[in-house]
Length: 153
Image 1: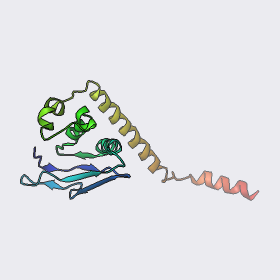
Image 2 (image 1 turned 180 degrees about the horizontal axis):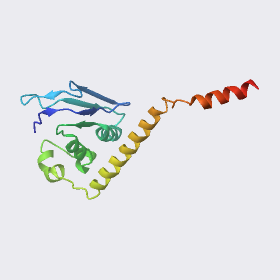
Image 3 (image 1 turned 60 degrees about the horizontal axis):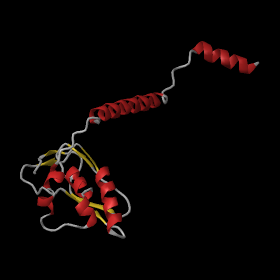
Image 4 (image 1 turned 90 degrees about the horizontal axis):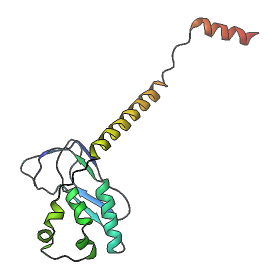
């Protein structure tokens, strides 16, 4: 389904046998009238199993926020037993509709979101504390003068 909107974050997968062809970038506003294919993910491997495993990894790494994508749908195709075994034809989507369209609700997802937010919070605190290390507090004249006096003796 078309999903117009602004792309807030995009992280494309990298690695051997992985290529993306696309024209979108962070901040890009996808108009209501557009070609719904905003990017192609091209994978190759020495055999089918390697290519499917690379595709799974690449889909896992591919992150786009702000719009809806078909990434989860493609992940379900890559985990479909018929697809993995090469048992498919032009009726593949129709024959596997229930599994491909299933909306997996994750009971632990809200817990994972909370943990991820907490980790992000801790990292931001840590990085802000590191950036303040660059700014040394001024030393008192008394302490500075006392240290200087002790070196002269």
